[in-house]
Length: 252
Image (cartoon, rainbow, N blue to C red; front, side, top):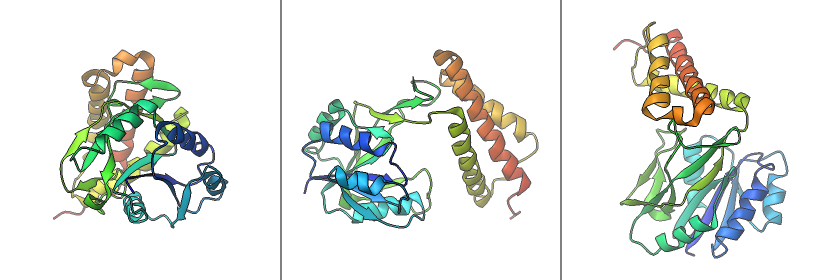
């Protein structure tokens, strides 16, 4: 078996049908589509089976462990990870087919992120490379990175040019909720690393993040949309350092 496409899911009935339809159009030659599900409570499993995908279910503990388990659930030489809110285009599918003949151990794929319905090409949201196409037996996920997973690859990785479409946050409320959850995780990670926050960080770190997004990464080129995103990412930094300040790391 040459290529398996793996889609991790939990209650993805809204996004999964279009994701699987795009895969069927872009990668009709793929040997397997595996939906690796975290015991969804909606119609995710039924929709996956109706589309011809193989379904494996596993209780979710963290993203790194889930992806590692998904790797073990396939026998393919190559694995392509796709999220339910992502779409593989025919152009990307053709590039993937060529990449599988190359000696690299993996391939980075750029993403076109749509935030609040708008393609976002600045403020750090593009090219947003993701290491998603992997030689299965030469890849695993770092258990120390349960969120924002890190692939540990035995060998070099190349870069594809055609983007993966990512239908990211649909609303500002969804964006704020997800970033608030990330702030909790990031504050915990910094605390475990021994980072100590100071009161002035509540002002300096959000401002630094805003400047980096809006000026350095040219968020201004996206106009009001870029300004809003940069401000929201500054808010994320404020949340993170407020949490870190409220529960400081122990002194060595």
